[in-house]
Image (cartoon, rainbow, N blue to C red; front, side, top):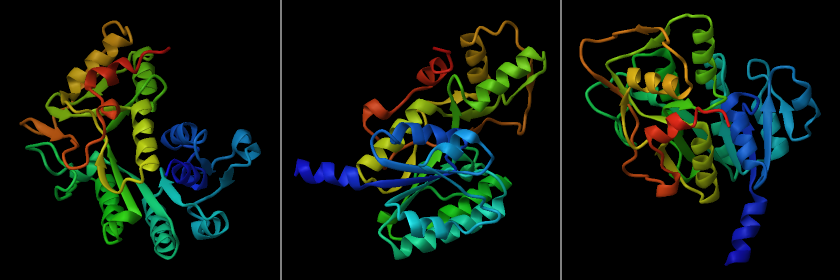
Length: 281
């Protein structure tokens, strides 16, 4: 039994599409030591060009099916950024490919698929509805995936991601250095995650062959303004300037909580843990 398990691990070939981006590269670093892991990159980068496990891929010009046919990954993780129409086309081609091959897709989605709902947090199998272009784009891909057998996909809905080297923390530090206001939403209630916890969660999902929909945020909630204030305190930023943005008169939730597909306790996280993750080691 154990031998079969280890053979299965060795045989897992993972392709991360968008592995040169922040999220994709963090996933590559997490998974590469354990699985036969590959990635794609788009922008010119000597490091990726010299790494034989990275392949150039421009979703606006190329058909991803060609790479899939050559590599034959058993798991595809999409962490793409860029033109929404090109992303939709790429995902349609990936979905067609996994229908015809022994492979499955882990799609990195967003809490924004629920950004039309404001009165309560959202759970895995709640109906999606979005007012934003970004949220509606993610919903289109999710809906296409949910037409497949459940064992063919994982939809990983992720809230705001923080950590010492994340783009959000770099932006906060840059705005502070420029003495520019940091935008905060005082009546928006959210949950969050750290990049380290997120990559561990995806590792677990890959390792245990999980399927379906997962909400990968903290188990507790916080107001966006309070979160950013506490992050600034943790970063020891003295008297930052905040620009308070009120997009509604009432409190509004933008939070994805797990209920049906809970991960083990050691893979769950809290807001305090996420805030502490922004410290530079």
